[in-house]
Length: 285
Ligand SMILES: Nc1ncnc2c1ncn2[C@@H]1O[C@H](COP(=O)(O)OP(=O)(O)OP(=O)(O)O)[C@@H](O)[C@H]1O
Image 1: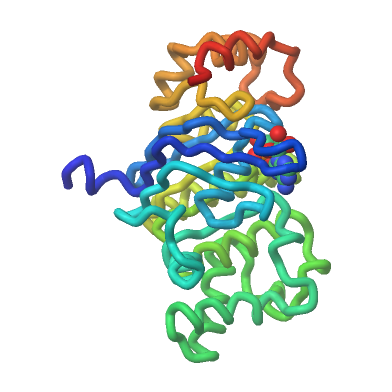
Image 2: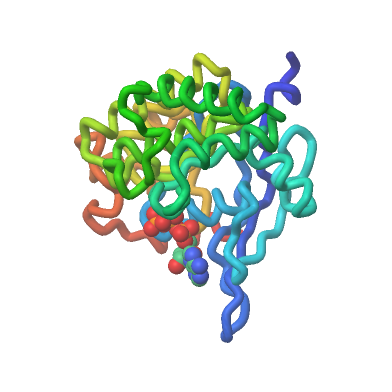
């Protein structure tokens, strides 16, 4: 496989503006990064650095007030240019998404089984009974055996960890090539967080997924990703293999973060204040 075939997602010059009464306000500035097949890319940054906006642009779910510019090539197609119909065909079978808060992504009045069966019937053409047994297989895969009766449950009846496992099972149900997880474990306690991330890594290896992991937790990104993009106020501070960036950060901002976070696992939004404006000025183009 040559290098071009190896690249699954190629983001070039991605900028995002929020349009408000005062005019457009740029919140993401000219990002360039790539995700290679079978690898995990971390997008790390403090709160408000543009991680979710970047994820939303890739997944085609930007809020109405936001406008994206640039190119986001996925298997040769620019995701910023696809029609809504093309996007619907991609969402599920090609692109899976795990949200920070499963409550907002899961339907409140549909059973978990019904919600899981629907996309598999639509995208994979499975019969109802085939989709039902596949749904239970997927729940088994994420550590929810049939005896728990989750297929017949509703989201409000499940714990936070169980909801996130259900989201993961749903996100992989149509066998996407790329899975984007936006702060998938932020709302969970440390033990469950580790279980969920270990599960994601196992699925990545077993199913041959490529993964984007968005987090404000530098320690988590250091531990679970192959490559990393560091964002600050919508600017790309640096990008490279995670091992290189952690061992030898080129950006003073990343160095500051690492020095300020001697214990990996510390959340970036709780770190001491670093003088950020000097770094964003340096990269502003
Ligand atoms: N719906 C919206 N309307 C207007 N501005 C928004 C909206 N969503 C995000 N923003 C702004 O865009 C910028 C980037 O936000 P974004 O949510 O992408 O950051 P983030 O790094 O994901 O932070 P967090 O971890 O807190 O979600 C911020 O300045 C934020 O205030």
